[in-house]
Length: 218
Image (cartoon, rainbow, N blue to C red; front, side):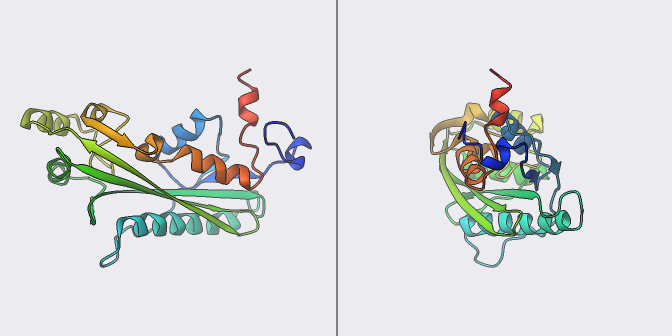
């Protein structure tokens, strides 16, 4: 077996891959490791946390619900039904048990920066994969991140950049906010939005020829 390819892949068949996300960051991360999804099917679900729901529980639940919602769409499309792997992810940033929002308003982002300044926080990403047979596989990844103590000027400049918009916890580690990180324990790509080691493991475990794209780079 070459580069983890299954017998079906060697015969020219492979399952199609559906990424249940509209996130350009998650798509770019998959492309970084040579994986190009066949379809992008964003899942429209209610992401409101349940009462007293823990951050890690929320991340796992939303990933599962996104994958199931996308799988329903896949089953309604003849060119995808029965031949597609669906993978979904959801990232939650928390300080203690407090879940930080995916910021759309500057006031939200400002409050997040104040909470994160000089403190450690956790980033949880839930992953769910649904096989062509309808079986589910899940992973939950946690990374600890510590920010430097932010000055008023740094907060104001970051807010003015607009980079926080739509980001869990109000920041993007792969962007300007990388300058705030003092310490990181765990997966960096998890903080970006898709833990690549775990995503690759799930895909390879289900027979997806995730390494085939690497051959084109030789």
